[in-house]
Image (tube, rainbow, N blue to C red; front, side, top):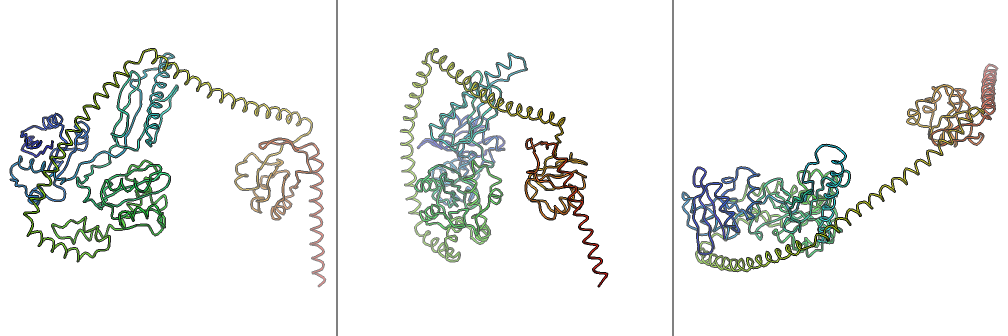
Length: 611
């Protein structure tokens, strides 16, 4: 059955229902219109323009959810009277019933666009079915029970999806004892997901199709639709399909997707004239897809980077990076041809299919020759219009009869399947309460065992941390005792750098500084440390010549670590009482070096005076 609808007057609508040779004619209000469609359960509801009936996207979505029927808008490429004349349908444009009947017949000829508001993805939300209320130890125990129940249902749904081989992404809100909410986005249409919405005492599950960001119109006759297919091959292959107007038709990703299946998926939506990739050098997989359709291959001058791909796809909801790359390739191809498409639309005369012209231009056909061919076609068409129209109507009538017969067969199959579902439900209901209790106990025990394992792991980590802290405490005790025996604390720098010195702000006047790696420091870095008036520096490696000169000029002794006995860790250390003796020797060496330098200067001065 096909239903045609048109506006009759203030809040009234003309409804025509066509079922074979039978025709139902009614005048209905808006609410009665929706109820009648729900009762009749037609395959298609055809309208001149959806805005005449639906005032918002929310109202449109509610209608499609509740009626489970295909909604078709007829007047997209041309007005309803023009389409009626094209297909030989007599119509009085002032009679709403005539317009409703014309809409119904045109949709049966696969003329028009199906209204699409849902993507090929499904959202499953598992959450609590009731509020937990205020606190208290009993309420906490009850909350733990509810969260455990939500987690059990969530895991069971994931198991079903895994067994079905469906891909999905998930996000979970964890709470004490389990989870309070889990969301799964399945990469498949609603009808392919073997999960239905339901509620229990503690848990509710909502299953719904993921909404599109905007309402899309999909041609009923897909063979006439010209497409751009963006492809990202790999272990997981993604395909993004757009029409030449820039509307996203479909996007899908799948593991181990072979070429023949990808070709079949694209063919379901139309004929691609452009196959696009995000790589400068097209992968062999993409080239084979291009060859299968005899399409034009589009690849960017340079590989699209991640930032560019994110910018191109920012307005779309995508499941993973593979889908993002495929969609970015398609959009990049569309942007490349966009100015050419606009030019074509301006130059194409009325009555010529602009999309077909675009497809031919992409393949290299000159625009002028297309128009010349079109004129010849029009002259020939006038001579055979009557015979062609009769032949077309006969073919459509035959197809309608075949579809009606097929519909009856499918109705019988549906009835048989409903009986089978009822039988299986009765079998499930016959499970004994003991079996349900046993499953509940086993689930509870498994959850407890899992929690015990988690706690044992935490205890092991804490024991290891306590052991390390005890060792540090013992070392600190020894060092404190060592202070009474003449051991001195040193400040540690991991390396001689500006950041390291600035981070250790506690280094100050009179401190002994131990530099583990002095190799990277230069003159300015050494001066930063000397300006803090430190007492001495201890080094483990070789210091730069410029840094040495700075420390010597400030009179700060440099002592190698191997000359001392040092104990401690990465964060603190102490030197033995022998430090003072070595410190005095280094000071004396610095003093002698200074005296030698002064004498050399004096001798040099004398020599200069003699000359």
